Image (cartoon, rainbow, N blue to C red):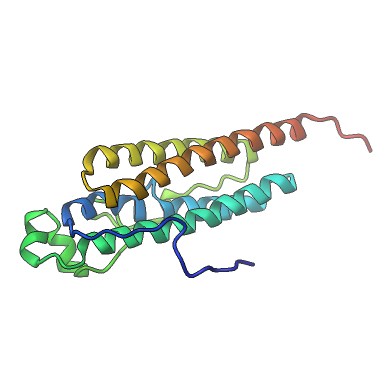
Length: 190
């Protein structure tokens, strides 16, 4: 079903370790508004969509969210790479380091592991698409918060790219919501 290109959707080339920033960015890896939750949400919801275009949109965006998951994981890894245990401890990431060293593990910035409770698949296409619109706005807001915390252009540029993709996804979900509502409100003639 998928063709995997062995490159990131947008390049991530962070030269300077920053475990404090890694601690913040990891929430977009495995947090409630992060890329893993988004991809699983959309790839699960696609089955109950009533029109092919809605199924395709959820499939496309869910797949792209997996690419974003990979980008965010690369960012976390590169931000931790080369940092000493002392730097990691000073950044407040000592507990994470104790459990995972510098490995990338899906959790929030406060260390709460990923849970399926972060995703929703109601089976009602209208409710699910409203959930998706809200999810994209929450992710956009999180990326904006991360941009306010970042001072390294190597971190800022991928974050800006990811924020912009959340805006595009929001727009696409709005378009497909209108089409699903139109389909569901149309009279059926047998």
